[in-house]
Amino acid sequence: MLVRDVVMTVTPEQARTWLTTRPPAPIMWSRGSANNEKARRLADVMERGEWDNDRGADPVTGLPVEPVMISADHGFILGGHHRTTAVTLLGRPMEVRVLFWSKPAGWDKLTGAERQEKQAPTIICEKCGWWSQFTDLVEDHQNRTHKGD
Image (cartoon, rainbow, N blue to C red; front, side, top):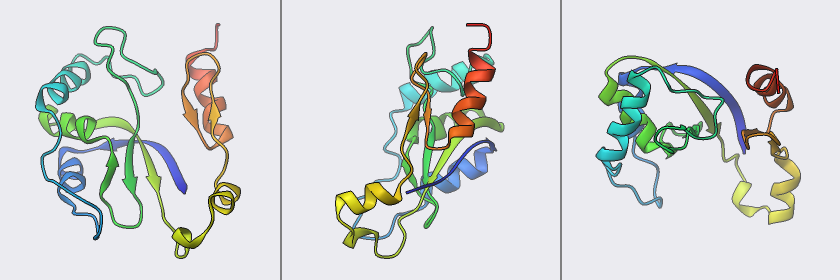
């Protein structure tokens, strides 16, 4: 379940910690699984100052500007290995959208319908596909990004 959706300053040290935190068994894990070429391209976008957490994809590279997803319970990466690796390659802090997910006790025993009932619905920006499960964040995004549209 999504517990926090935030744009935060991710330092190379924090990125390394997330990249090297092993998830609890039985989740399969392999260190250094990110494709370095893709991570370098993302680091180049960040270096040029073209990274935009409100955009669906970078218009030059076509690479997605998606959030990093972290397990709030254990501190490992659920998604975003390339973006996190890019921050380590960049070597300086970077503002990145991070989603923190939690798996509350008993979550696995719930039926799909029960899980869906507990989880907030996803709200999608109709203009660009940017999404969140927090209405105020989608409204803030629309005000920042599509104010004059």
